[in-house]
Length: 243
Image 1: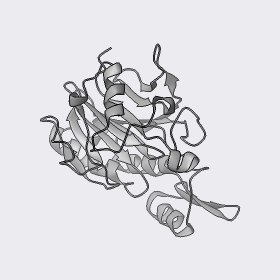
Image 2: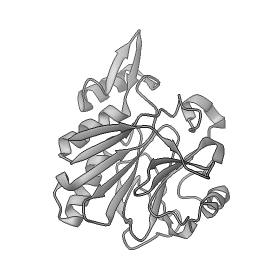
Image 3: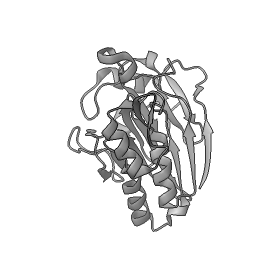
């Protein structure tokens, strides 16, 4: 697998978004844009931000996230609000945008070469493994090999900042490799990036782009670990922006 690393960039003429990939586009709301609200529930501020960015909130797919590995098929369009519990969406990126809310967890976008079918995922520690579920679904739906799939791993808490109980680090180390769970100076840590890269390598996908920015270290991003109860959820959106 070809793996490359990138840094988040400012979006010209916008103080609301940071750019992950300009070609798709794939963006994440800045911390200063405010709290985007819990997924799958009405969020007036989120709707205002989307409208200010030229997006029709009704055409931004979303689900009620539950930190699972469940991937649902939304190619036919938006579900009724709060009617679907999942942490991944298969969707037609030529017709709709899709959004997941995150605040230390990782947004992941999977695209298939020469296909409009894509998957947007919310991957936290409990849901690590959802990328394999999504790859399998994309292969089944598009009848394309896994090697035709590319991944973008968005910003998340980095391994240096993600201190966890020792047993969780051991679980990650056993399941996802030594870089995904480790101990240092008497503390234990997990690395969501390393775990997901390992899973994508095992799935034989073509390439992965990894965002270096850490939600804890980068003040432009929202972080539950850093900010506690005052944290602000970000919205990661993939698909056409109506600028």
